[in-house]
Amino acid sequence: MAESGGVNYDLTNWPDVDLDRVRTTFREVPLVAYPELARYGRPGIHEALAGQGGLFLASDMAKRLALSPGMRVLDLGCGAGVTSIFLAREYGVTVDAVDAAIPEDLANRAAAAGVGDKVRPIRTDARLLPFDPGAFDAIFSLNSFFYFGTDDLYPPYLISFLKPGGEIVIGCPCYREEITSDTPEELLLEFPACLAVHSPGWWRRHFEKSRSATVLHSALHPRGVEFWEDRVRFLIEEQPPREMPPWKRDMIHAMIRMLNRDAEGMVSHFILHGRKDRIH
Ligand SMILES: C[S@@+](CC[C@H](N)C(=O)[O-])C[C@H]1O[C@@H](n2cnc3c(N)ncnc32)[C@H](O)[C@@H]1O
Image (cartoon, rainbow, N blue to C red):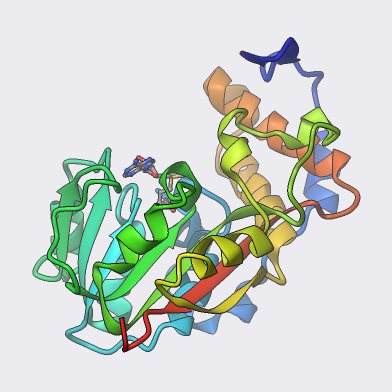
């Protein structure tokens, strides 16, 4: 339970939800919309990824970058490194896979996927990056940027690691508009981390005001709400809720309650795509 300012954000004591209704009303992202992911199947698209959208969102992000074999990419907040392996396999790039809690087995999984020479796991804080300025052709960050990237000084710091002309793409949960003191409690998932979840317009200004990169795109993903629903569907179909550990059941219930409360599509996902100008 997290508490703040006298408001009780108890995420553990919610009434049961009607899972049959969830199964019939929550949408699944259709696999046919992503032919490039056919060989992964639904489990491969979600498995070991820690957030919504899975490889669907990752693929849409990667398509925005002008990636070509041999380029060097920073996968920032990579978690288990599923996207690092994905980028190396699908685009032939070399990937520095950075996370504060990177798993020991990433190098082995990359080798098993045939990209052991292309994925370099690095355990470090995203605010203490051990790279030279201009080291990367591209920066990619899925479902993690809000944990470390909201400081005003972070965009220019991060962009300094891009080559001139290099690109950044961020995909994350977002609010359609900034939350306020009136935002319903059900929408404050993972409080207080959700206080760092912003709107696409906020993220655009966050990067633009630093003048470190040109923002080419920062907008809601057209499947932004669907990604939440799809994730819930995957989680309850992957494992019967009665067999889940309590923390996981509570997390899924919190997501369902949030989506049921959110008639206006306030919770969604966004993509930001920017480029470091050649003059910097
Ligand atoms: C929701 S997970 C997403 C992981 C992965 N990108 C994915 O899509 O599965 C967020 C990740 O951000 C990482 N993270 C949070 N704060 C961080 C920081 N300050 N530096 C580096 N990584 C951080 C966490 O360790 C976690 O792996």
